[in-house]
Amino acid sequence: MLISRAPRAAALAACATFLLASSACGTNESDEVTATSVRLYGTDGNMLNSFPTELGDRADLVDGMKGTTPLTPLPEDFKDRLRSIDPNLTSFVYAAETYDAVLISALAAQLAGTTDPAAVAAQIVGVTNGGQRCETAVACLELARDGQDIEYRSVSITRGGFTAAGEPSTASYATLHFDGTQINDAKTEFVGAGSESTASSAPPPDAEAADQNEDAPLVLGGLLPQTGDLALSNPPLAAGAALAIQEINAAGGVLGNPVTWIDGDDGTNPAVARATVASHAAAGVHVIIGAGASGVSRAVLPDVVRAGLVLFSPSNTDASLTDLNDEGRYFRTAPPDSLQGRALADVILRDGPEQIAIVARQDSYGEGLQEIVRSELERAGLGPDQLNLSTYQPPEGAEATAVDFTSVVREIKESGADAVLIIGFSESAGLIRDLADAGVPLHH
Image 1 (tube, helix red, strand yellow):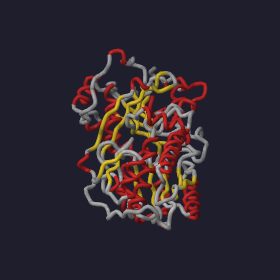
Image 2 (spheres, helix red, strand yellow):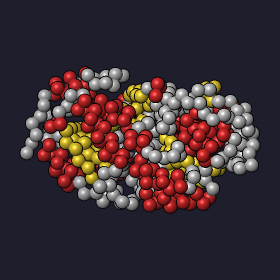
Image 3 (cartoon, helix red, strand yellow):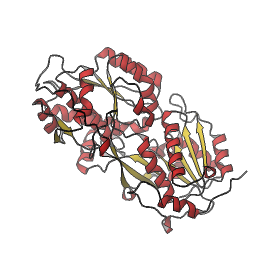
Image 4 (cartoon, one colour):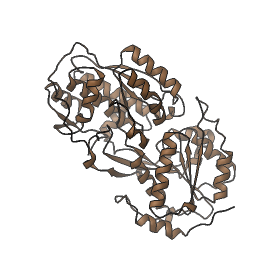
């Protein structure tokens, strides 16, 4: 049974009252869709230049797809430095957040005067709040070696510092558009979210002037998605980490020694990630950079805490991670989805949809963001009868084509949706392909 549609004007009126004040409302006449076409929207898990390759010879199905991702306008110099690490880099999503997670960890160890994970963790929030502002590895490490309290600002941390929970108080989001099979950078818009007033004002433990320490070197371990459903996101993460290590060591390292990096895969899979955490603990790692997916971090955090280490993710966005009982050992440079959900809802509302389907992975990231977007859309004036929510069990292992989307596609068709938001990773390609095969006319 088709659900009755509300007038397009209702959605536009809702957009006019939407709370993301820095975003514009309304539709562009040239951007109007036909009565039968369906717009696709995505999130940080699939709005990547590498994503269309998952569709093979049908990559053009993403043409016209829009979405959001946490992203700060990146200086060309920073992009060039990343390309010096990986000349084939096509996406920069979470590269800055990874770079900053590594550099903050190094500065925290230098200020602590030790590589002891508990002491390093105690300094991390303070590194981003109060003190002498600095923006480069050279300048910040020099201040830290002198025992000077610092306020780190860099590529992804540009306004407010960390909250007491160890995550950004402010964020920048990009609205992205696929033109053909590539994201059109010329159409990218940026919008700010969050408030600097939520940053922690608690003073960090006293810093110690330290050039060397007998427990150096600082050892960082990667827990990044080299394989699995998020593998398409790994190149910018890996490049950001490698660039930070390179620049820290070029600036003299930490506590008189070069920082050591030990690679590690999270497999976008808790079992793979747990094995990597165990390996890192045995190898003497102090801080683990990762995991890529929120659900994987949630699964391995108890192991990290038991091992007495620190987990610092550049890409976890599940809002519920803010309230985890982490014993002060979990941090992230990616902003929580409580901020992204508002930006994403605004992008959808701009096109004036009358019936919206929101499809999400059955995990903490997918279901968490789905609920936030639903809440934001209803808060903006859409009725529950204009929204259709569905979830799917994500594939296990590397088989991204293993998801059966038959029932999801049926729900979307029966709802009469003219907008479909897909909250997923590489397996999202399967849903897009199945929608096209079922005769759903995708907007281009």
